[in-house]
Image (cartoon, rainbow, N blue to C red):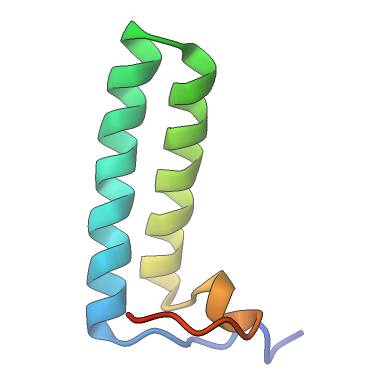
Amino acid sequence: MNRFFKPNLDRSGRMVRGVLGALCLIAGVIVGGDVEWWAGLILVAAGLFAIFEAISKWCVLRACGIKTKM
């Protein structure tokens, strides 16, 4: 299990995930307040997970063996 959670992101990948996470959080707050609460909840959850990946230097897709660009 330790190998699965080993850091696997470089600086550019962390920046991309951090920015995408922040954008998802902002979109989730806007959509959740105006349109549908469940869509906002999904966007907020995705944003929080992307920020978690950026902070921990870990990508779930890479940990599962899927190649990503960043």
